[in-house]
Length: 154
Image (cartoon, rainbow, N blue to C red):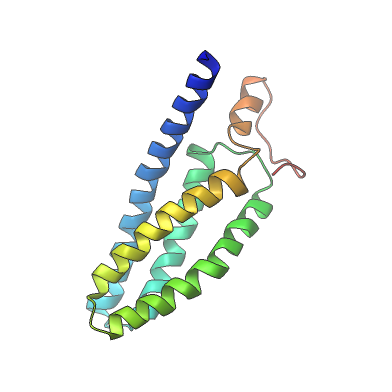
């Protein structure tokens, strides 16, 4: 029973970390989107994709180290996250562009897509990308080995 509670607490802490770090990625996305949309007067979809990519790179890098503490193969993890965005990006870009062209404020569209991205990305990264490798970097460090990238783990 204690072990189950400890594991549940660890997952709650992981979700809180992911949330806080995703907020930092959101600030990057909103800031870059606003810069491109307001100051440079760039089309919605160009502003959205550019700001999304910057946010993804930040979020992947920081959450891999801080939230998931994963020592699995970086290239494989990045490929799996890329595959998530192969689906998410066109769907959210097309739907967002349609909504914005229908008169929905572009910042409302951006907020809705960011919330959907946050929820879906957490579930995908936690239970697919890092399903067996959470806390492996920490475990290796506590075994007096430097955490290094494993070629086979996922």
